[in-house]
Length: 261
Image (tube, rainbow, N blue to C red; front, side, top):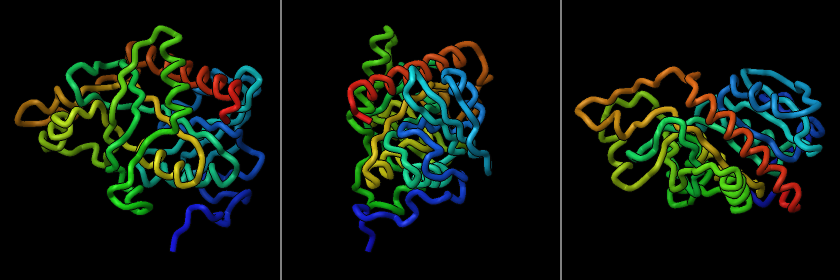
């Protein structure tokens, strides 16, 4: 029988997928899904060095304000991301923070908005293999508080609430989206609930900050779903990605300063 209080048996060893071992990564790891976002995050670090790249899973380790920080891409979806989360924890990660893209599910969630959820609907395609359906998916209070405080200290308004982590990007049924919107779910994406569950089971801290790329509530209001996403490199998105990274790095420093790592 599974007992997540026990070691997994792979601690400290070379990890098959991320190709990292103990000593390669910092206690705090930023885990974007998009490999293209790695360079943007690394640009905010000093002394950054590339550790590994395998299967699109890219890892760098550097420093922010003299505190060690790593970055590892996870790929898309709960199954891929869950492998990365597990292996990072195996080699010493104590805090995992996802920076990712979301779509809005309420009319007021606009493109470029920053979302920091305090819980997730678990529909990620991976966490159901770990825990039963009635097990929650929530961030660490320390990480959630550090992210939201960091944003507000910068004067940045954020959206918070419950996010839906789903696993079918191109679903064509409007009701697929509208049903969760009626339940006041604020956003959707594909990895956060797996992150929250695995981190809790493995006794590490986790949080998520997302940038809104589209509004699926508006796009599914008719008889057909508009599944398009505008140019992801447009200014409103690029500016918010940059700010989300800065919020995250500031939150990490805050956690180090307060001995929360």
